[in-house]
Image: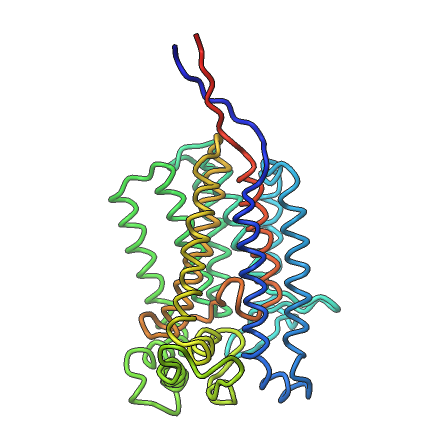
Length: 371
């Protein structure tokens, strides 16, 4: 008597859904405290940024719900369209007056009533394009090479903003998908070395990024300049101790820690909730990594599996870059902390990615006996 496996569509992973909804809600509560000072300062309303993020979280929830309903395989039809649109949007950011500058980089596109960050959309566009290609062709074939060129064009345009963190996430995720689809280990290492060389070149060509890098290496040498952000982050984390100074009582968010509601929200969390609260946040990302990978690994088709693994890897890498940046393990790249940092485009696209994972989790494997 042999067993055969049959794939059916069942109920989605309720634990993943409950976790994501709960984690995003906790993120809003933490953002309320971290953003209150800047909101009062810029808009004379301590709730201004919180309200904007709440709307984005609501939209992200709707996107997540809708994405979880339809057959994920339909996404294969939109990989090329979405990638070409992203290249057009990124060109408008880099080479037209429609790009909006903030914090030393030009990452946002202003299209009248609509303002968004094309690089966030490019992450999912590259994922869909590569997952579709690798599900149909060998990694060393012509169609894959063409897709790689398109993704690298997006990465180069993102580097020009400059946004080194997002470009590295896109390139690293593509490398991960190539390896997961059968790329030789030595070639994978060679690709990583090439990518590292590209990062070094980007640092050389962008004084803004080189200044950040030097501030990361020796923040104490320029405490009021390039090393200021990291030192303020250290002060916030150190001030929190084991249990923190209490929710809403952060001192560093009062104009000392820059963008305390976005890039540097984790030090505020550490200051207010201490080591215990920080570990709970890190534990949340570990749990998401587990549930997301579990949903992706049981998918029968190559496209769904690669897409799910790529989504989890991309969001996990984003969290690693942000957390490592604020504690000094890596240079700060300006990548937001998923589910928690302020960022309207980021949270909506995160909802889209999570919706795909929930969609994938509905696919079940049932073993049947065959006589």
